[in-house]
Image 1 (tube, rainbow, N blue to C red):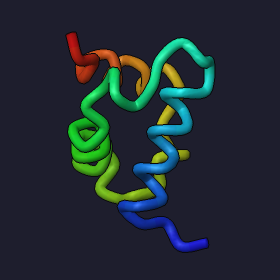
Image 2: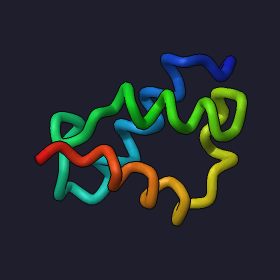
Image 3: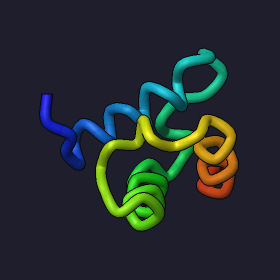
Length: 63
């Protein structure tokens, strides 16, 4: 499966909703995807460490 913006978005949503305590609507998913894209200069977000993922995602939590 090619790694694309769409697959990266699906990855982010899946990670955010994986624990069942939050939904995609609780976060600015597009902002998270854009930041990760800039950080790794690609779409394969599996390359990110889990801690880095959550540090960045937490900055996009909607209040």
